[in-house]
Structure formats: C-alpha cells, structure tokens
Image 1 (cartoon, rainbow, N blue to C red):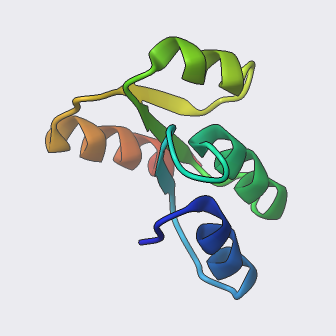
Image 2 (tube, helix red, strand yellow):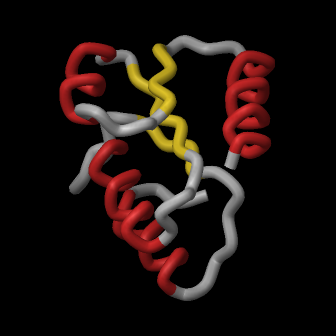
Image 3 (cartoon, rainbow, N blue to C red):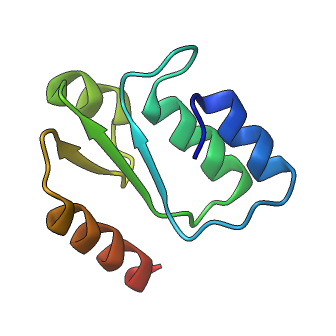
Amino acid sequence: VCGEGCAALARLDAGLRVDCLVTDFAMPVMNGVELANAARQRLPKLPVVVLTGYASEAADAAGASDFALLRKPIDSAALIGRVSALIAAA
C-alpha cells in the first residue's frame, strides 16, 4: 500500500511484483490514471482498476485505455470480482 503515485512507482522500480494495480483517481502529485500509465510503461500488461467519484473526469483522462473505471462507492465483493476477472484475463 502506497500513499501516492511516486511511492508506488518507486516500489515497482525496486522490483515489487504485483498482480493488479488498484488506485484512486484523485491523489496528490499524479492522478490514478497517470499512475496507471506510468506503471504500464514498466509492466505493459498490468491489470489496472481506477476507483473514482469523478467518473467523467476519470473517463476523459483514461481516453482509450483499457483501465477498469469503477465508480465509488463500490462494495468489496464487486471490487474483488473485477480484480479477479482482470487477473484471470491477463
């Protein structure tokens, strides 16, 4: 768990192995879509879930990317289901 995008990228650069990136859209320094794009430069097939209360802004920022955008609030079962499906498809 990282508090902001730069810390998450530093952990990936240090060799942290992850099956899926789950991030919030609204974060300090960089938003969740920017983090996802930077993470995918390192791990191109990394499944990504971006949680947001700002669906239109997140969708605009994601563009044509294949991120899963989930609108908050989301229950844990729905989040787990989405993450599981992305990992299975990767």
